[in-house]
Length: 170
Image (cartoon, rainbow, N blue to C red; front, side, top):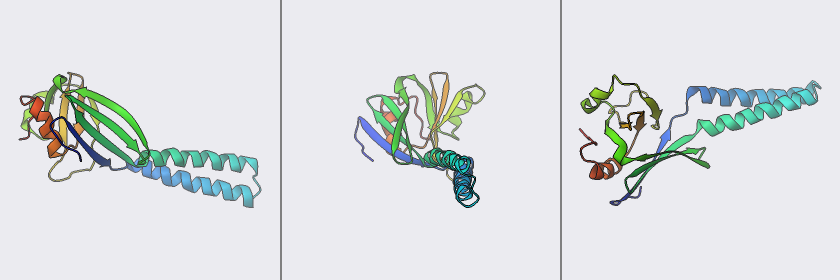
């Protein structure tokens, strides 16, 4: 964590979805079975092609099974990056603090007026079910998006310093 008045960064490990964990295990099992059947039963090229296809499926499932989100605040802009398998980084969003309608803890009463509106939901949190207390913050952005983050106190304070009427810490 690096922190000063104009730059804050934090990293959140996201829990793998059960579907990805299942796909990862199933594709690895099928790759091994296909490979062994091609050798032992003489299915030949068809078994090898299936083994390679299931191996590729395992590779892509394992990439999406280990996801981290990195939030950066720098000069009135929040940047969100997705880190796949601790190797590949992809920028998935840049948000201007001036376009934030409200930012508050996800269960805050400050967000009640936005609950009946329709927004595109972008969840960049750890996706833990029912943690106590809820560490997530919700940002309503530009009338279009509902962004769910799991920032540190320093990150929230940095955003609050430039938008004190829009950021609530309850």
